[in-house]
Length: 286
Length: 260
Image (cartoon, each protein chain N blue to C red):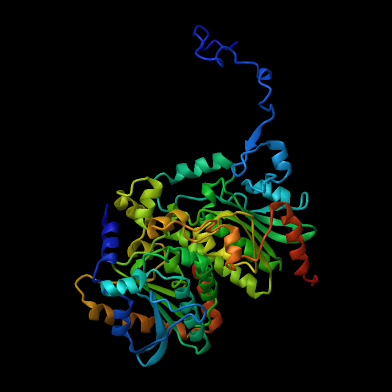
C-alpha cells in the first residue's frame, strides 16, 4: 500500500481515485494523435500502420529507426558506427547536457543512423537523420558517419540513399560543424565521380548547412509532401526583409515548382519508388 | 573574455578595406568578368583575371562595397545564388586554362531572402563545395573580414586558408547564437567567445594555415605581405602533380573531426 499522502484530503477527482473512463463514451479508449492539418483524432496504432500519414495526407514526423523499419527489407539493415558519440570539442557551455538530453529524448547516440540495407531486394548504403537528436543538427559525428558511409559505398560500389531532416549545422561545435559540409561534399563528389548513384529524400524540415551541402547533392532529389526545405529560416527571412512570405514558401511543392526537386513522393510510395530507381541504376556484378 | 567580440567588431568596422581594395593592391591589370550565365550578375561577388608577379590567376572576392551607395548596390556583401554560380563559373574557367584561383572572403553570410531561396541558395553553395573539392588547380582563400557560415565556405574549400589578424570565421553570427541559445541577443560577447571564431582559433583548429598581422600596418603593408604569402603558397602548390594536390585537399577537410 502507498503510504505517502494517506492522510491528505483529496484535492481533485484524480486523487479521489479518478472517474471511471467508461462513463464518458465520446473519448476513445485507445491512444490517439491529433492531426495538426485536419484536426482529426487518429488512433496511434492506425497512424503508424499507415506509415505516419493521416488520411488527409499530412505526414507526421517519425524517428529514424521507424523509417528504416518501413523502408528496408526485413532484417536487411546492418548498422555502421553505432557507437560514435559527439564530444564537447570546444568546451561549449551546456553542450554535454544537451547531448545527454538528446540521447534521453530519442535513445540514439547521434543525429544520423548509417548502414547498409536492401530496398525491394536492391542493396544500398543508407543514412537516415534523426529529428529527435538536437533536431538533426550536423556536428562532427554526423559529418564523420555520413563521410564514412560514402567512402564505404565507393569501395563497395553501392548506391547511397539518404533521408535528411535537420535544423542545419550544430553551433555548439562551431566552425568544425561548418567544415563537415565540405568534408561530406568531398566524399559525395568522389562517389559521384565513380559513376555511382545518390538519391536524397528531403523530409520536414531540411534547412541550413545540410540543405547547402549533401541534401542538395543527390543525382535524384525526392521530397516528402509538405516538407519545409530551405537554406535560410523563414522567420529570419521575414525579419530581415520585413515582408510577408508567399503561401507555401519553402515547402516541397514550392521547390518542385521552382525546379529544385525531382519528385514529391508520399511516404506510402517511397519504398516502391526507391526500389524502382535503384533497379534502374543497378550495375552488373563484376 | 570579450576578445573574440572585439575581433568581430573590427572585422565589421566601417572603412575596413574590402576585397576589391586588396585585389587592386596585390595584383596588376585586374580584368573583371561579370555574370553567372544563368540568371544575373551579382555585384556582391567580384571576379576576373589578374596577374600575380607576372603570372595570370583567377581572383574572386566577396565585395561589401566602400561607400553607402556601394554597400546597397553590393547587398552588403551577402551573395545571392547567382554570385556563387558566377564564382563557380570563373573557377571552372581557371581549371580549364590552368590558372590558380585566389578567393577573398568577407561576408556576414549568404543572402537571406525570398528570391535567393527561389533560385536555390542551398544548391548553389552545395555545388561550389562539391566542385571545389575536385577542381584541378590550386585554390587559396584569404579571409579579410567576416567569414559567415556556408556563405563564406562556398569560397573557402581551398588548399590553403590565410586569415587577417582581425578576420573571423563562424558557423553562425554571435548575435544569432546568443538569441537561439540563450534567448538573449545581448549575450553576444559570451557567444563570440564560445564559438571559437577568431583567426587564432582557426589556426589552432587547423582551419587556417597562417595569420597576417594587421596591427600597426596600413593597407599597402598588409597587401605586400599577402602578395608574398600568396606567391609563396602558389609556388609550392603549383609544383605538385594535380592528383596529389587533390588528395591533399581531400585529406585536409577529411581530417576535421576525424574520430577513431
